[in-house]
Length: 167
Image (tube, rainbow, N blue to C red; front, side):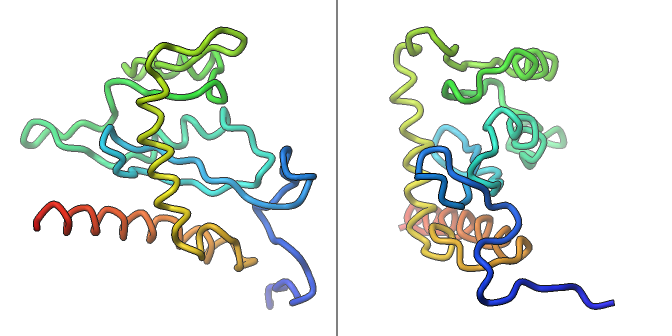
């Protein structure tokens, strides 16, 4: 049986949804987790209307092993920084069960002092990710193709940083 592919006249594709801030135009959004130096560890592409709270645990579970003691690499970070979009009591509880300290501003409260300086690292990584036109503007209608470009762009960013550090 042949799968039905979108016709050229059809807009969007799966994983696109109405944007809550851009006059309800269809689009997508990236959820990114990175280390303290801005090295991306996991990126997930979703529709624009998907809440950040739903992707928190998927990002944590997608982190590859990081450096630690020999033969015992750490699987998870010690702390998780996030903005108010990631504030959700069940996620905080789940993070504590996984021995991860949630440093997330609460909705309705003032921001945590100094969190903006730490969030800058993530925003800088998003800016580097959006320098790749295939990632910033979605041209593909098939999810498999679009979901492959974001990790590829993150790998190129990591490679460029390593190359720059060696010189």
